[in-house]
Length: 112
Length: 114
Image 1 (cartoon, helix red, strand yellow):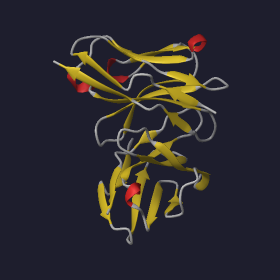
Image 2 (cartoon, chains in turn purple, blue):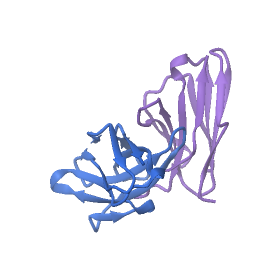
Image 3 (cartoon, one colour):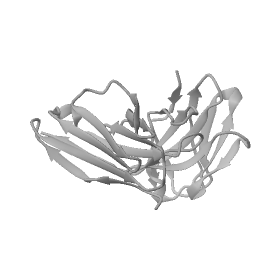
Image 4 (cartoon, chains in turn red, orange):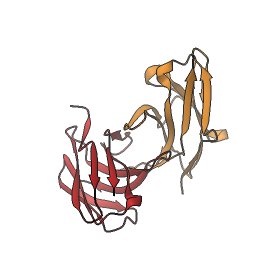
C-alpha cells in the first residue's frame, strides 16, 4: 500500500460543531504532517508528528487539535472553527531523512 | 530561514510546445529540492526530487529539473507539453532530519491550449 488516505473528502460544519479529520498510511512512515491550503495558495504546515510525538506546531490556534494514536493514523480534531478556516486540509507522511512527503487527496472543509 | 520563489504565477503554453517553470531557493546549506504537481481539488504528487549527485534529475511524466547551485535555481522542464499537464506546480525546499519542514513556493498555474 503506497498511498495516504483521508476521510472525509468533504466536510461542512457549523461554528459550534465538533468534527474530526482522519488520515491513514500503511507505508511504515514515521513522520506525519497536517497542512492547510487556501485557494490559490501553497500548502501551509500546521503540525508535524515524528514517531507519534508532536514535533512541530506552527502556532496553530487551539481550535485545531492534532492526535496521533499510532504510527499509521493521524487525526485532526476541530472545534469552534471560524469561516476563515474553510480550506483544503492535506495530510502527508514521510519516512524521514532524505525522503519526500507523500500527500493524501485532502479534505475540503467548509465552515458556515 | 529557507524560502522559495516562483516568479511566474501563470504560464500558458501550446500543446506540444516545450515548458520551463522557474524556481529559485534560499537556504544556508545544501538544499533538498522538490517539484510537486496539484490538479484542482487534489493532493500533491511528487514529480521529482534532488538531494545530491547528478544535478539533472529525471522525474515522472517526462519532466526533468536541473539544480544550479551558482544560480540558486531548480527549474522544471518538459520538452513537449500535453493537455493533461495543465495543473498547479509547486517548487519546494526542505532541510534534512528525521522529519522535514518543507517550504513551498507560491505555485505556477500552467494552462495548456490546443
